[in-house]
Image (cartoon, rainbow, N blue to C red; front, side, top):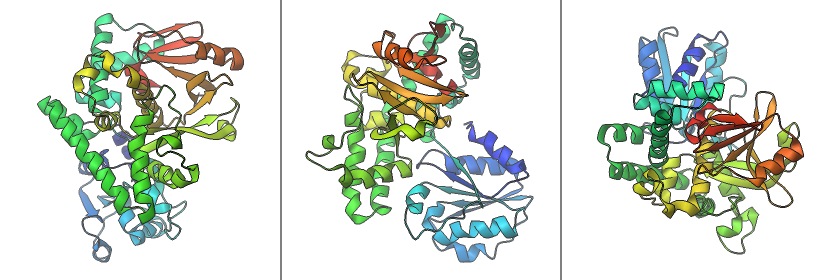
Length: 414
């Protein structure tokens, strides 16, 4: 299956300033597959070492012959071996022509340890995410549909009704299946949603195991509680994260490390509130935040959402649709490298996301249906007068009253 990361890897290979590349991201997002496919297509030889399955590799690696221009050296799960990570500095300084890629599922967690060294300025770093909506369409052979969506997004022109309907059907499938490559591949091959749910549950179990394996003993239970509570809090009308929802009468300090672990692992992402809309946004970041899971399919699996309730858009999910769709949009913002915040007025008129797109600070409102009337966007626009606003919903493309209307399936275009 095509992954956008391939374009980045080709640019990295031919860059005159190439350094050893660290490819980080949560488990099961396709890092190993993507690197091996890239290696097979662009090198005569690929030398693959996995430190998680073979922890004693480092001594053997030193005896391997490496032909820099023809060989891709791939260190997998490098967070297991601190010495291997430190060796990247030597590769950068003494073998600058070597083509080195390392992958890690939990590098952020490992680096958070005080005694874990890092080759600062000696490596390139890229984060990989699950498949986005565009990659999902391409995996289904829908390249023409993906191109039509991008064209309508750029021109603000309405998609033909039939194409809009088909794209919305794929969007609902994506909500159920998510972007984990194995799940997408199995669905295309079998159309068996029961099998997909089994795979998603297996991934969630692996995540829980990582929370035990790569965490401090006194943080394991807290991290699991926090992760399991994300889906619960996304079911609320207000998706701001509240520690008291995890455990009554709990202090924030008791779960701060758990939230940080989930964020560093890539299993979840944190979006902070800003108190003012001025550059730079991060200067106005408050302590309040929302938290989302890394993959929308895993979120549905955690909530045991029935496939028909997603695919047929039933009212059974009315209480959960808002948080579900927010998570979908936040993932696409993150995957596109856009740092998102949210804003709330004194009267609690909340703007779902605020992003910097090109040279402008843009509000992004998210609706789960085609009922797009909202006072909160009006409040925001009157107060801050943005260049324009973006509203995502089930409605077709358009631009009116300084609001760019975008169907949810086109979130990958942002």
